[in-house]
Image (cartoon, rainbow, N blue to C red; front, side):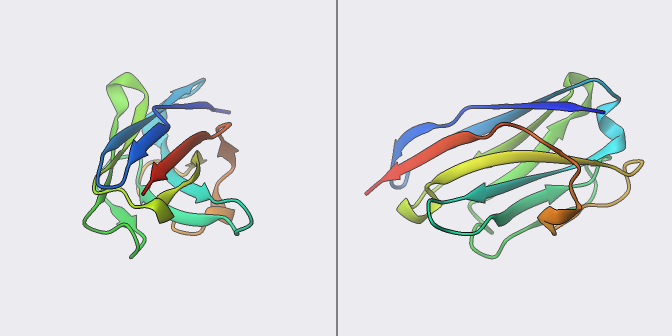
Length: 126
């Protein structure tokens, strides 16, 4: 199995930027699709972005398209979520998730992920 640890969350003003990181350990990271999922207080879990293990295929939610970018560095066993032009409605706990699949596909359904990090809080003030 793979262990995931997120970092990079914090408090930022609207319009600002943050980069989240997801450090993976335990297995060959390139064999795992990864995703970022968020959950705001009182709301359901929401898909944010997904990336195949190879890094060649990606998807993101309409609410973050053009503002957030998912990426990965398999040599460093680390995934990233670059968040620009942040809005107060982006406030949530952000989770990194992974699924073993050999590296070919991404998954936009958060229920497809087998491994989850502990989450990192992102708060955007208006």
